[in-house]
Amino acid sequence: MKTVTVSLGERSYPIHIETGLLTIAGDLLAPLLQGRRVAIVTDSNVLPHLATLQAALAEEDIASEAIVLAPGEATKSWGVLETLCDRLLELGIERGDHVIALGGGVIGDLVGFACAILKRGCRFVQIPTTLLAQVDSSVGGKTAINTRAGKNLIGAFHQPVMVLIDPAVLDTLPPRELRAGYAEIVKYGLIDDAPFFAWCEANGAALLAGDEDLRERAIAHSVAAKARIVAADEHETNGTRALLNLGHTFGHALEAEAGFDGTLIHGEGVAAGCALAFAFSAAQGLCTDADAARVAAHMREVGLPDGLAATGIAASGARLVDHMRHDKKMDAGTLPFLLARGIGGTVLDRGVDLTDVATFLDAQPR
Ligand code: GLY
Image (cartoon, rainbow, N blue to C red):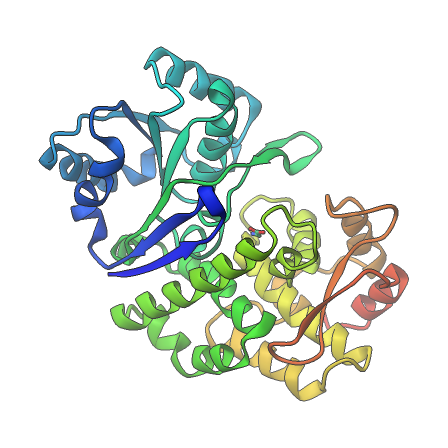
């Protein structure tokens, strides 16, 4: 078993990674859960894993209550948050009890937020069941729901007490979801780890084809990178954690233009966004055209969008930039932008002129 620690003083927690971990989750959770109430919140797509987890807990004589929500982004809403909090209160969950979030990013974000506000904060464990949640959203304590005004606009930082990652659950994940999660893995290489990007170029295709060892190594490497960044800037105040948004400004604009209707899923937006961030950086003379071409080539090779044309989005640069102006990262009229001085050389630039971005996007092939 690989273990990575998120070092946050008294809120530090371990992330355990091992294929088949769900079947022995009782062992790892028993010291936390003994004698206390346990609620597991999941969605109806995850029921087979719920059965595995409840059986693993039962082996340690730990009884659990399951709350099964509807799958999909619409579950991250005020309405479902209220229902979930009422249910957890009915179950008598106390501050020292644990709620387990078993699912993808939607479940993790919603349950994390419910636990941030329930009795001013109760404990929770993340057991992510998608690659995207395993390498990104389950680690670092960002929790949120969506509102009419946009995604993730209401939320809190609330760290889990443990994260359990079982790559075996990925066997049943649709290939498109797997590829989308892989985009976030590549992102760690692009941010500050050129050798890891080269590792992805060499191993990405085999990893996506299901190689267990490669999958486990990539997940462990990614969560270690995320743990380092979160430890350096838990609340995204000193510019370090913002590096994790590489590809996300372009990506969110593309997702918003696509209408968040499943035609372009988050990781696909991030893949296209990373390729565009590098192409824009090359156009600004920050990195070489060869670096930008390498990023696009790897996305293409693994079946991810490698730029604007591959997303099928034909909107003008001005329209896409308009989506960026509504980004929650807008700060006093400027948008902190992630650019690259090269592969592994991502930098935060607060001086990017959005009209230059619009002109660049208009010049992209459609
Ligand atoms: N997913 C970006 C972050 O956790 O900061």
